[in-house]
Length: 115
Image 1: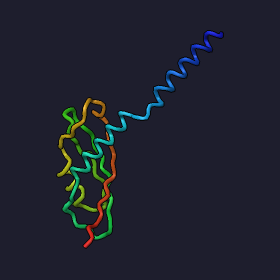
Image 2: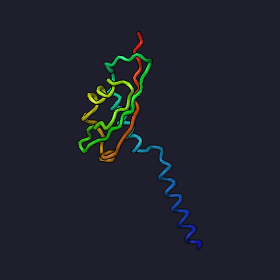
Image 3: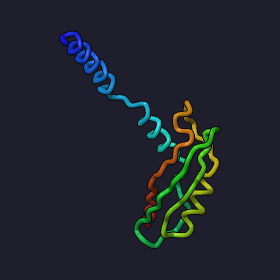
Image 4: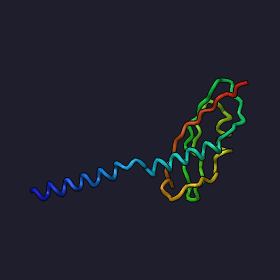
């Protein structure tokens, strides 16, 4: 019984040190993907009447690391065409296949330009 307690304690300490690592490579991949999408969607040529408008974009990545837009949910009509023209089948620079065949959902907020 004493040996079982010692083994159990070692297992607990070993696994807790694995999860205590501050860098999570999965989050850095998502952050990198989000930053690349922000660059692709930069400087929209859309005029909006309200101070801001929001859209929700659902997409996936194919085996060539290209963005495939699934849905764009927005109240304004032109945003869907804008997002699809800027993002659909654009290649992103990600290493590994960890994001392949996963669906992503991000929000897009467009602010009206100040005159």
